[in-house]
Image (tube, rainbow, N blue to C red; front, side, top):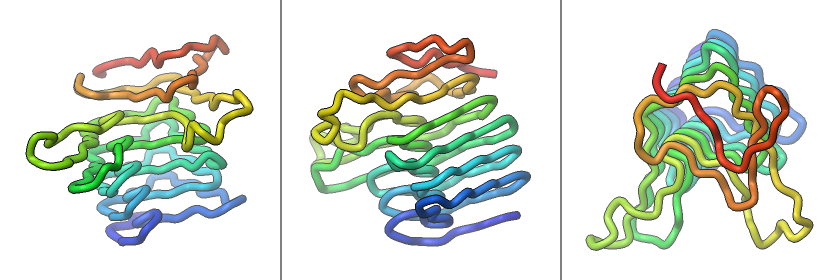
Length: 193
């Protein structure tokens, strides 16, 4: 399947609501535009295999994919997440996740993530500042609402990140778990391929 373009406030190409299950296999999702989740906004379960998600653009969060606190994204072998952009001009928003912004569960195993960019501009003196996670941002949706002390767990098994700059932002107090079940406060990611 191929889904090209689309424009919305949430999920330019695909919006997955509560309890939905979206399975993309041998598919292409590209060039969507939204405030959050340029290509895909998921408040449900998204699973991809041998799928390309690319060229998405968002104003504030998740150029290609935005995962809500209630959502889960399983990005498996053969999945390529590429060239997502989050760019905000003229406000005070801190932008997150050029390719992926995840506040819920993010399970990456064998995915390739590259070419993401997250920048915000608040006037000429601050051009290109205030972006977190050029490729991937994982963290809390609203740190003020997490008073129960619960942290999100993000499963970053094998992630191929191409390039070196501003790759991953991990939210304060969040962690990831490797394949052996060990918990880490910072991602250990394979760079290059």
